[in-house]
Length: 180
Image (cartoon, rainbow, N blue to C red; front, side, top):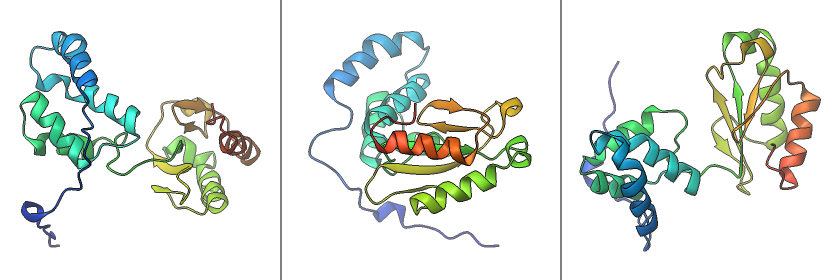
């Protein structure tokens, strides 16, 4: 097996004029987050959560800005963002559907639900619809094995799912309900 290397030293990072880490955010992080931790680096995860919630992804520009704010290496921020499944470097849809694929959900038919959602929305897991409304994710255990199969619609857990349930949630989200 060989590892393919990327020319990361010469990669151009897309930048927008306004920063992702706004003055208001940095002020709030300084007053509310940093005092909770022994080091600035320890505040990385809550800051990334804040950015993910605000922008529905964490851009490379945002990673560089966070690194500068925390006085750490941009690579440390990127390692964290790409390690955790809940962070995305690409914009997510307005409604993120995360179907659990743990062993309990597998036994209870998660694949049938995932295939149905994939066919209905015309996307595969870890893709977003062209209109930006939906993202489908295949997630590891959501911790609700006794109510499998389960899925998250944005951050709301839905249990004992059937195709009819999931269709109703998609219909609600399509109308702007978000699937909550």
